[in-house]
Amino acid sequence: MINLPSILTEDTHFYQENKEKLKPYLGRPYISYSSVSSWFDYKDDFIKQKFAGIQLPSGIYALMGNYIGEAIEHGYFAENNPNGFTGQENLDFSRYRKEGAEYEKLIVIDMGGYIIVGFIDIYYIENEVVNVEDMKSGGKDKEKSYSSDDYIQTVLYGYAIEQETGKEPKIGVNFIRREGSHVNPPLKIGKEQFYIPNTYSKERVRTALEKVDKAVHEISELYSTYQKYFK
Image 1 (cartoon, rainbow, N blue to C red):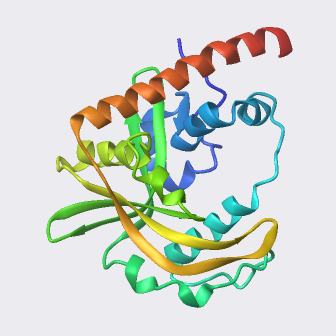
Image 2: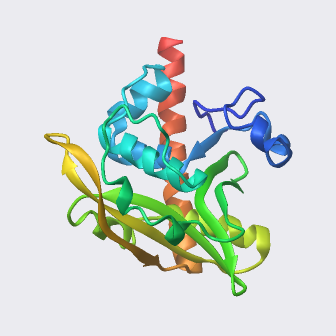
């Protein structure tokens, strides 16, 4: 039996906006790509947040990513910019605001004992091609990680869309160069912006699902032990 810290309920923060799609999965454990990534890369923080319920502050780079993502989703920058991000004039909305596109589109992958959930940054159909695009920002050479075979987010989301539409998707990352750093503020949206194509194949889907399943079983085992002694 899979035992995860996150269980889908009507109180789950994204449930009400996606009730029709999520209702069949009520009561099921769920995991997101970001949680899988955190488990492998920042295990201590994952345990603090997901097991112990300790709220950790968001890093400045994550906050900038959210700031850009929300602007693309809505088509404009929020007036509230408490972190003083600059370079808003460099963001070409026409590049990302596609006709008929859906933003933050929910995906669900049923893995039996649990479900994988995620939100596609940009989803659209153009010339009968189904497009699944993620948005990322980063500093010098950061884009290399998004062209690596180790990067599986768009693969997972593409698989969910293939199950939903029956069509093999085109997947990739829209990368926005970030200028400045936490030690050299302010952070600025750079002029350099480009698309990084990702490879979609049955083999990559299998590898991605296996990676998620490995994380889930490791988390489940440790979480069961944690509950035994600390709950």
